[in-house]
Length: 218
Image (cartoon, rainbow, N blue to C red):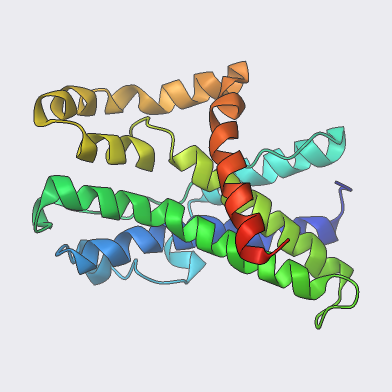
């Protein structure tokens, strides 16, 4: 990746929307299942300003893109938005519905990756929207969304995969697993620092990439 202002802009758009629409999806599905908290706070919106965390949405992903550009290494995008507040006690069936609320974010990332994939097909030479800039942005959109989806599907609290695991485990195991949440972020950082995080995400990425290939007809 060449480091330039154009590259930063082309990557910034998919990064911001990948993170913010992920959070909005949680709030929207929570509303469908009975919790109005995020809706009442105006968090069920595509407006990035409502979701942006200065460190997690801008600084951390920006630094990772910068490091990748300067070292010519593959870009690993890691970031977060302000978490959408969900009161699981308001859900009609809290344990069961947690599965759908948690899964909504990664699913939104997959749908966005699919959308960027269609744009990529249209932006390549001979396509309706042929443009080198759109090709780079669409490629970034696919990569970012699949990475965020794979990261969030890891069964580590407070990631979405951890909440999905809690919803699927028997009550006795779920309660014990939930108590590990305060240590989850440190676990993620440790896995990232040791290079293990990428290895854990790789199988999920391969499945998602295969699914995209089939759906896009590539």
